[in-house]
Amino acid sequence: MEIGLCADLHVGLNQQQVQSLQMLVLSTTELEAMLREEEMDNPFFELRESSVIEQQAAWLDSSRRPRTTLAAEDETLRQLAAPEDDALRNHLWAQIDWDAHTPDEQRLLQILLECLDEQGMLTDSAQELAKSTGYAVYMVEWALEVLRGLEPAGVAAESVGHCLMLQLARQGEQDRAKLDAVRNCLEDLARGRFGVVAQKCGLQPAQARDLLRRVKLLDPNPTAAFQNQQSRYILPDVIAEQNEDGWTIEINDKWMGSVGLSDYYCRMAHQSDDPQLREYAVKKIAHAKFVISCVEKRRSTLERVVRCIVQKQEGYLTGQGTLQPFSIRDIAHQLDMHESTVGRAIRGKYLQCRRGCFALSRLLTAVAGGSGSKTVGKAEVLERMRHMIQQEDKKNPMSDETICAVLTAQGVRISRRTVAKYREMMGIAGMFQRRVV
Image (cartoon, rainbow, N blue to C red; front, side, top):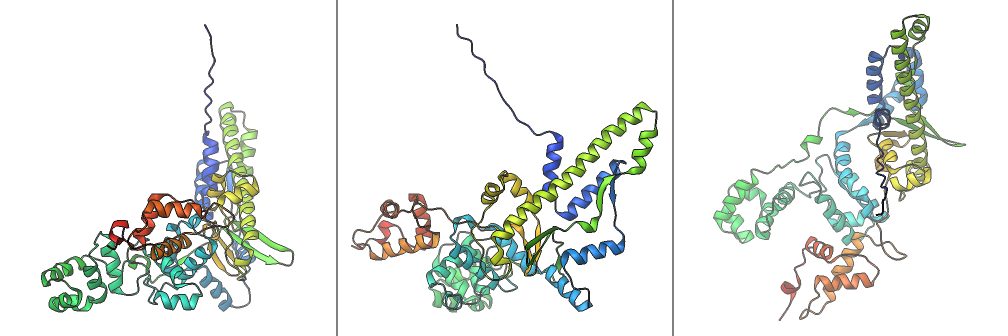
C-alpha cells in the first residue's frame, strides 16, 4: 500500500498585517483621524502636535506658496479647490477602461472630457470638434460614443433634446422616429403640438402624446448632483516640486504633527513594580511601535510610488507633453512591489504640483493590447469594420464570423461576439438585413 503525504499550505494575514494595509489605503486626513483614535485607546502612543507657527511654516514650505501677498495665497487656494464640474469629470474618468485604448484615443477622450460644459454637455458637433482637436471625424464620433455610454445617461449630449433622447435610448427605446422626435421636436412635444410632431417625424398623434408622458419622467439635467455652488477643497497627500536637481517629493503630513511614544507614560511604567501594569505596558508599547513603523512604511511606499509616477509623467505635469502609457503593473514591476500594494498606495490620494492638483489614479494609463508590432485601438478596429462593410458585395454581405476572420488575419485578436457588439454600436445591421437582392 502506498502512503502519500499532502501538505495543505494556507497563507493568511494577521491583524497587524491587515492594519498595515489599511493604513496604506488611507488619505492623509483619514490617517490623522485613525491616529487620533489610536492615541485615545493607547496611552503610550502620542501624536505630537506642532505649534500653530510650525504648522503654517510646514504648509507654506510643502505647498511652495509665496508668503508675500494674500492674493497669492488665494490663488493657491483656488488651485486646490476642485470645482464640482471636476467632480463630474472624475466620475466619468473612473468609468472609462483606459487600458483598452491607445494613447491617441486616451488623449482624445481627455480633451473631450475637458470640453464638457457645466451641465456636462458638448454643444459642438463632431465635425466642429474634429476641426478644433485635429482628429479625424470618425475618431471624434467614436470618442463621443464612449462618453455617451457612461453614467449618468445623457452626458456629452449636444442639447437638452439630445440628452433626453440618450436617456430614452438607454431605457431600451429603439424606434428611430420616436428618438428623433425627442431630439429634434422637443419644443413642439412640450407644447402639446402632437399633430406637428407626428407630421415631422412620421408618428401617430397618439404615439406623440404617449412619448411626451415618457419624456416627463426623464431628467433634463442629469448632472445636477455634481453642480453645487460651493467649492470642494482637496488636501493634497503629496507635493511634487521640480528644481535644477530633479523632482522633490514630499509627503504632505507635517501639519498633523509627528508620532512617537509618550515619555511620561513610558517612564511611569518603567518605575512601576506592578507586574500587571508592566505586562499591559509591554503590549501597548509594542503596538504603538508597530503603528509608528506603519506610518513610516506608508510614507516610504507612497514616496517611492509617486516618484516613479512623476518621473514617467514629467512632460504632462510640466505642461510640455501628454500622459504616457503607464499602469499599476508597470510601477509594481519597476519597484518590485505587488500590484495590490501599488493600488492601495494611490487609492484616493492627490498630488499637487505647479500645474495643479491631480488624483494619482488619473496619472496612470495604459496601451491597449494587440497582436503584432503595432497596437490596434478600438477606434481603428471600428474604422476597419466600417470600411470592410462599405466595400463588401451587397448581394453577399460579410457575416460577423467572416469579419472576425479578416481582422484576425490582419493581426487583430477579436472574437465574433465582439465584432457583433461593435457592429451594433455603429448602427450597422446584420448580414441578412444588409443583403440586397
